[in-house]
Image (cartoon, rainbow, N blue to C red; front, side, top):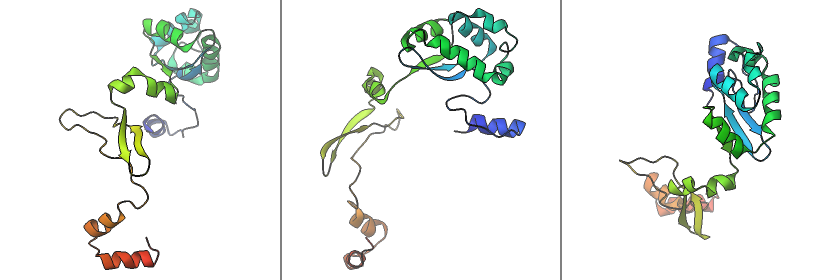
Length: 190
């Protein structure tokens, strides 16, 4: 999870700082509020920056020496991110995504939890499932995020209640008999 920050330190010796959702060595590469919704923008190279600037109505940004190359944009991160943030407020996230993706600029909408769970792709990937819980009955839960064709995964049961399987574990895994388990209970160990 620290690949970018760790690689930056290992190659330059510079310690990482806090960048929120930003990327340490690529600009613009962060999240931006729009007129409605939040957009993740992942401009990975100079060509994409020129396309992004054009879509935002400012092709001149790509010619500005402060922003032409990525190292220059990194040095002027606050200016670049500020200019882009100002422009993105003119339309909603969905509108910008259509325009930016048509130009070949990587981006995507940041969904709320509700939006993510209500998305048709969530259902298509079986990411919401149910299991019978010992105390509350049917429990809605997240499904398994990875899907393996040769060894399919599934949610087979609900999370246990506190100490629900204590006796099984103590007997089957630790080899304790009923008397030792009773002593642990009496001594308030379990």
